Structures are given as C-alpha cells and as structure tokens.
Length: 136
Image 1 (cartoon, one colour):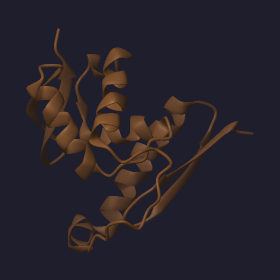
Image 2 (image 1 turned 45 degrees about the vertical axis):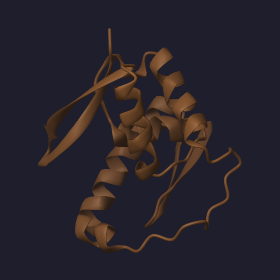
Image 3 (image 1 turned 90 degrees about the vertical axis):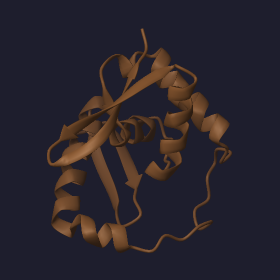
Image 4 (image 1 turned 120 degrees about the vertical axis):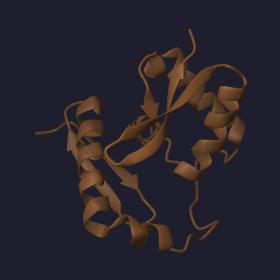
C-alpha cells in the first residue's frame, strides 16, 4: 500500500496521486497531467476564464517567499539539469507549495536577471519552451 498521497490543485481539475516516494508521485503526476491536457485540449484551457482571490493559502502570497522556495530548489541541486516551468511547479507541489505557472514565470525571470539561473529555448514535444539551469 502506498505510503504517501498528494493532491495537485489545478485551474481545470485536481489530481490526487499515491505512491511510495515523492519522485514516484512527481513522475506519475507529469505523465497523467500531460495525458489529461491532451484529452481536454490546450485550447479549452487557454479559453478558461481565471478567477482571482478564490483560493486560500497557508503561506503568504508574496513573490519573495516563492523566490526563496525556488532558490531552495537551486541549492538542493534541482536545477543542475535543465527544468521547465511545469517541472518546477511539480517540484514545489511535492513540497506542499501549490502555485500557478503564472506566478512562477516572474520569479524565474528574476532569478535569471540576478544570474542565479540561466534560461534557453528548447523544443519539447511540439512546444517551444524556456528551460532553466543553475549557473556554474
């Protein structure tokens, strides 16, 4: 029986995944969310109206605390290999920090400007996305 269970809150749907380790849960989440997004269709998600102020957070909703959370991932070696925003979101979610991608993009840009991370465009699947890596 799996020992851990995590619920990922999304704008369109929530996903609950059980597993024996955080890495197993993250792997399953990435696979399932990709399948769900393809099934639902990216167009529907883009046209979905967003509401603000509907979610309550235990953590303060400041970009500096999110920046500290991402900086912690940097110090743990998470960015030793290139990571997408989606992978960053999943890694934070595994730590109990649930934030939308729209909140992450500004924090990631700031870390690039401060020369903590570098970024480059890569094609993943059929999408051109930014990937982030720790500066040596």
